[in-house]
Figure 1: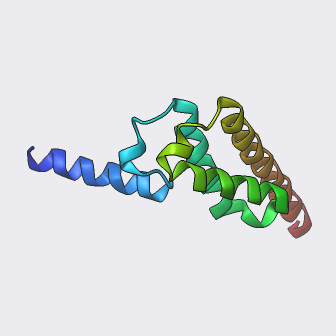
Figure 2 (figure 1 turned 45 degrees about the horizontal axis):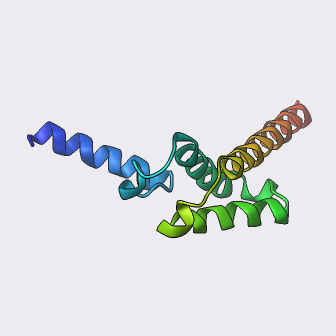
Figure 3 (figure 1 turned 90 degrees about the vertical axis):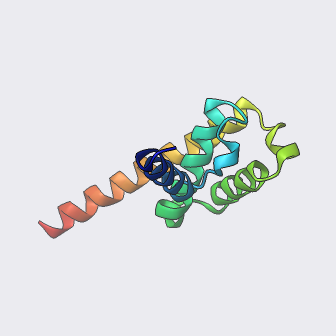
Length: 106
């Protein structure tokens, strides 16, 4: 590996860590699992206060399951889509909240 490859590898590893994805788990599982893990991490980090308790609990349980090999292999596509739907709802709430704040300041 040359210097550029090492530099790119470090940058990629940092991006994975920032988005809550273990580098060793990238090729283990489906694209939906990878995307749901990323969205669950970002949602809890950025919009956790906008979530209902049951939604936050679902995301936390999902993330805990992704960290254990035996549980990660049993995660269904439906569970991944449920996590993605929760993330989308949080994004909508955030956009609505920001829109109301902007209108209030005018």
